[in-house]
Length: 438
Image 1: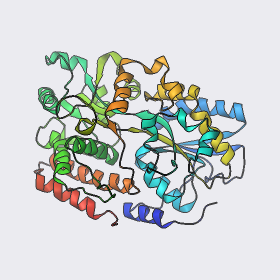
Image 2: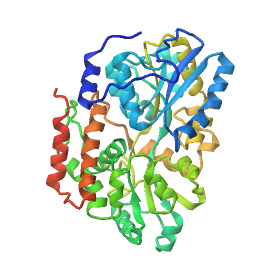
Image 3: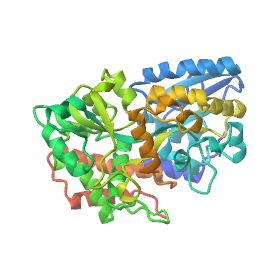
Image 4: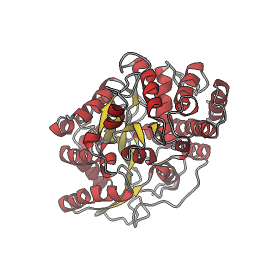
């Protein structure tokens, strides 16, 4: 079992002020602690509308793996609100699972802990080779120049989901392509208890995803080329303010959204309370909440002007889930077999269809099931206009500090307090002061 606590992990954990909670997957304390080559523990991230939905999706596939290999997988589906905390605590204690899902934006941070198995050419060879995977997905598996810390499992991108009937009733013939058009449309819907857009103002990860895109569209970066945080540069401030102003100034987001943290904005959209939703691969989630696929359209996330693309035309982060192995596992062979199984063409088709995500495996992505109009928008975004999260060791602190800054700004907007350039800069400066110095 891994018992050492590296300085990198300690710094990450302390800077996030994470509580040391009890860890362990399923009925095991993790890390293959039962010394059984016939058992694996697996932490799966919550991908569906609920933990129960995920269990129903995953269990038949885990049963299939057990039938093929004789290895039983004990799965625990971990909510996003707990996942990073659980993982970081596991990296310091050594009491983690054998295999786990991670948000792909955390790859470089978790790589820096030294707790995850590096995916060398040899290890990739055991699961069919690195060239099976799409380049954009591989770009979010760890720091450049190092062996990846994880393997792509599900690929996602943000898109604009819009209610067709509400648009038709408002006389709007097509989805907005620019933020000016978006705000104009949103104001038409924001009356009578309905709103133009729903967001998750208390969800730190959602906040950071949008903050990065809005800032990037202004030409801003949150880190300098040598990896130092640069949160208060004028373009970053402008981008973050533009996002929060959708509530504070434009008033097309309900003030109550400042407290949303887990799928509430999706539920509001599915129930017709909002006309638009900015979400990553939302179709399965909407279907599970009773919204017909015919009831909504999908379009690229708007840009400042022109069309989505590289540079200031970026309109999404490269989103997705990676699969990692704790390198202190007592069952490396079984863990590798499980990763190979989950990233096989057949399983990729099943799982990514279930979650409305895009397979990061080339062979599965070519399947006709992933060439629907909805998936075409997501695939095109991933290929042409999405950007990877900053691949720096401090990325998880970045998500926490800047995500919290945006959360505080939404709270101000909801309470009627002014959101100004100065207040945005002050919130981002506070976030930057919490980052480790280089």
